[in-house]
Length: 602
Image (tube, rainbow, N blue to C red; front, side, top):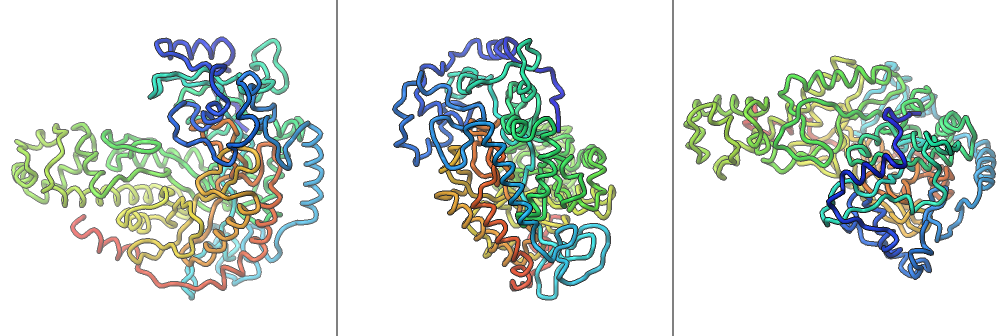
């Protein structure tokens, strides 16, 4: 469990911070806002009125839409649930939480988990391979990829992302910067029923401490958006349910649930203290720091410069911070960086050109061009620019004519390969037995990016949200092991208003869609595991970027979704049997594919 390493922020201090940042901007007063617009704002608390998501359709006839704002607010109860709707399993009082805990204990005792598995969740009843003491990859004689666990048993990874007590964090700040509409949103405290005082207040209660608990990986993203006042509803509910020792009980329960429900992995972005209990294999995700390419663009961060002298040391420093996990037999491997923006076929080279003269990648580009053309005058003639010398090239931010397209593409390929090569070298220098699980491509990756990843990574990783994935393959005939780092389905019949990226009609439909996706992945010879995003629902009122999705295996009150649990157990019972009967495939080795696609890149 983590406690925020900053001063507690609350009351007058937070209001003063908002006023200082937004003094010149008119303020959106919530008491003048309709219930519909308040709920619509949940999705983007930091971008109010951007309408990034339309108001969800299934709720358009509900009675609360006709309420006055005075009747409507507060609209979130003390458990973090929407007040003006009801659904099966909604918590009405603390006794409901206690009853749910007792019922689940009986359920877990009756369902200890699938048989025929070893201590890691590998296939004990399957073939016995060499026991190396670490996770590794394996391609069987039928052409199917697998992981192999430390005891030498075939392993197919299935489990939830973000196993954390703090999935229900939500910001109370409105909009601390000037939004695109020019109308700043006021603090959101009025949305919530019975918020406790700040922990440093004379009136503080036992629930005040949940202003200071947080998910360690997500907290920097809140801070980056100026969201300094955040309440952790999920941890508060665990405290109500399990008492003072709630975190230890939740941690123990996480392992018992995963085993009972038929899964075998704690996926990335989970609480490390839970991962390090030596009870369930886990995948770790780290994001490294080093100089970035100044002209680049990214969904989360700019592209790290692989030629910078701090690139490899940045990877090493991050691994040293996570040394226990990196050497841990229970750790499947590390995802390094996340959902990188690779741009279009020539974009990396263009971004490098739009960076300053001392950018290491730009210097490497100059070296590469000089070797190819012999002089900068020749480069300028080819590109339609007049470069007097090397300094003129490095000092220029101008983009060349279309005549440079081939060079831009080829050097973009060089940069991609350099990124993966140097990352792998740093990972393997730190621990040669640690699996490098790639960088979790966001949905898709161009062929040359996927090929470079397969060449240098032990496992290629994608976050792929779609109905099924049985017919999906790596591009260009490439054959390599693949991990699906994220997928999910959500519905809006219970709890939050957001159904996530892939939507279902209701909880029964959601469970069926999950089964179809996992079974299709088991039939895909390249896929060695799938990780569900995420273990518990997000906050009804939105997280740092407004995501407010009903995509958990449990809700914000730590109540498992019965339909989901039933589907998980059905999948778990047949997991290895389904995988073993799937057909294999023949593909092209990564290095051969990469060479074919990148002729002239060396």
